[in-house]
Length: 510
Image (cartoon, rainbow, N blue to C red; front, side, top):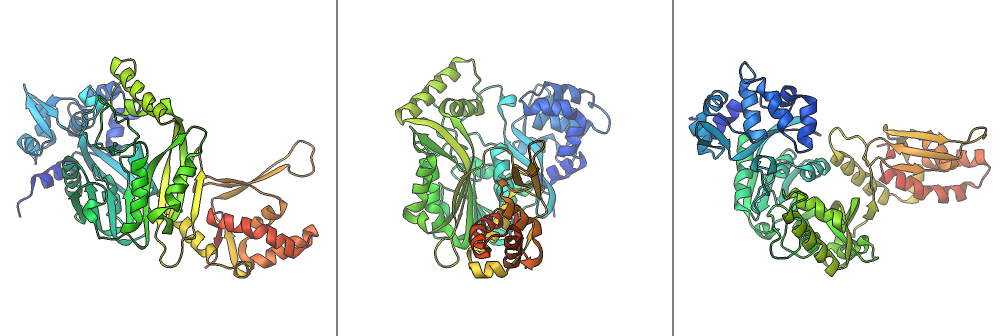
């Protein structure tokens, strides 16, 4: 069978060792840090030393596709011996002018670790601001950014029959979902995004993704999925003349209405037991609490029958939020264009009495039977714990732990055996000269990196959870030591124990 152009490209990329580690080795840590800040000159200069020799093909591909700089045609021909320059032109990767190959797409390696182990793909997207030297066009197809890596890290990884990636963009979430789903449907309103996503799937040899054109859930009307993931176009954008409406981030609705619409509709497309995960923004109006708005979305309409877990990770005031997304579009501070856009954003927020915007995660689940048992809205600003395989592994364990404790009566809990999770540590703080600690803290090394300030009885209970004694037996022993009523101590500790199970501090013994 004759190899396709995509197959030939894949062969060349493998031959050139076009990987995250290899590129990092060429340009070094200092240049990598500069790239993270949006500066490519250190990396370009580092690659100058590799114009010849065994690393020349890798340097050429890195300069052209990652840094967005022109390279001599003969250098590209040497870097892509199987595909050739005509093949690269045919795939829409480059254009040729005056003896130079000019990049038309960003194509870069992307590495990750999930529950199945480490992996690496090549991801094509539109050229960014560094390569274009100007603001992004409105139909820009974004590559792998911070938000997309956040969502892929959050993704539950339990095997499922079907998954939906709503608003796939370059296809990165669909690729991740293809690792644990037998079948993936990826939708987008942008035909160009779907074409690039399909190209990425083909380049990486992933064949279980069905790409469909359409807005939100329209392309999957009447279907149900066990897992839905979405990095939707949630960015709150003024509906004003002259303000760019980027396909990849602007859903065309006022304020946070796009997020509300996704939350309201998601349950219609979830199979029993199915989970939807999305990134979201929500507005703070006047002196109001944004969680009151979010709670209203969850408690009314079709979302009312779903389990829900909402985590706010950050809040930006209205001006800071506007500045962030104007820069994201490639418009630079200090220019007249930036000032005009900032004014439009501030006017829009002021007209709707919006003072700040929250950013976070939303997890929705359709109960297999009965009524929802999980309704949790919390603010967890600050750093997370360590997650080698992603936060999604912890979220999956937390859901299972919640289901276990929610379905366990107090009497059954007293009879249960628990152990302390391996990432939990205990801290004690005291003033010099004091006989006992003034504060005792349980700290989680993974998960959300939670800390729990606990009293003497709870600290003693956790310390005794080694899977050998039942909850009731441990509480009774502590009550005897503290010379308090065992029934009263049990009543006091059981809610806290349930909370520690929910959060992953304590683990039931199977």
